[in-house]
Image (cartoon, rainbow, N blue to C red):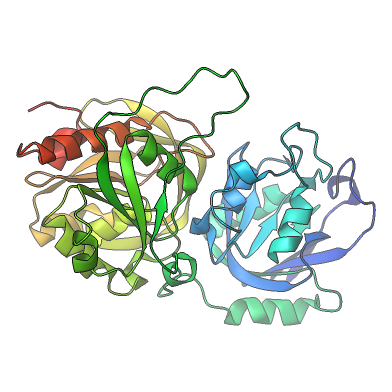
Length: 415
C-alpha cells in the first residue's frame, strides 16, 4: 500500500471556510490519497474515473451518467462560478464522489445561487480536495479505471479498512444502474434552451409542424430534452422499462433513446423493447441509447480501459472525413465486428480518432441512427448539435411516407 498526502496550499482555495476536515481516497490497488474534505460527511464507493473538461463542473456533477462513479477533474481549480438551478442536468447528483485539486468554494459569478461544496453536501455526495490529481489521473490512465472508496467521515479513514472496502465493492460490470436513475412515471417536457439575459437574440423559430416523440429515460440529460423541444417535438419522457406497446399507444412520430450510466448489457429487458420499437418507428440514440441500439441489433459491447470523459474528444464522420470536437462520457463501446457477425445491415458512420472506437451507427434499410458522443454538449463544444436537426428531418420524411433510412440521414444526404 502507498499513501500520497495533499498539500494544504492546494486544498480549499481562496474564500474557503478555513476549517480543515481530513478526507481519504483509497483505490483497490492499495494506493491512498489524503486531502481535505468538502461536501457531505460520508463514505462512498465507486469506479474512479477522470474528466478532462475545463468548464461545466455543475453539468458534470448532475449528469446521471456518472452514477456509480467517483469523478476526478483534471482542471486544477473547480468551484469558482458556484452553482445555479438553470445549469442542472437532472434533479440531483447521482455520482458517488468528486475529486479536485483546488476547491474555490466562495463563487464569483452573477448567476451563482450557492457554492459547489454546499450543493454536494445537500445531495449527500462527498468530495476531496488538495490531492495530486495529476498522479491519480496517470494511475488511472496506465492501470485503467478501478474501484475506490472516498471517505470524509471522521474516524472512518484507516488505510487498511478503506482499501479492503474498495477491493470488496462492486464495479460497473453487470450492474443495472439505469434502474437507479430513470424516472418513476412518464412526464411531459416542454422547456427549450435557456434564453439567458433579457435582450438576447432569439433562438431560431421552431418547425411549425409539431411531432410527437417518446423519449426513453436511461438517465437523460435535460439539455437533450431542450434541444428536442427546439426541433418542434412534443416530448413525453417514459421510464426505461416501458413496454413497446405502451409507447406505441401514444402514437409517436419517433422514438429517442437517452444517455445513461454503467454497463449497457446489464440493463434488464431494454434491448428487447428497443428491438420492437426499431421495427416500427424512426429512432435516434445518444451514448447509452446508442449502445443499447447496438445490442438490440444483435451487436455486443465491451468495457474501455478508462473510458472517454471530457469535452475534447475527436470524432470523425467517415462519410465526409470531417472531425468534430465532441463531449463524451462513457466507459463502454459497441463492438463493430459483432454487428457484422449479426448480419444486420448497419454501418459505422463515426469513429473516435484517439482509439478507433465506434462513435456512430446507422441502419441501411430502416430509419435508425445513433451517436456515442453528446451532441447536446452541456458541457462541451456544440460541433455535433446538427444531429438533432437530422433526426427531425428523418421523422418528417418518414411521416410523409418516404422510405428514408438512418444511413441516408446520418450522412446528411437527400433522397
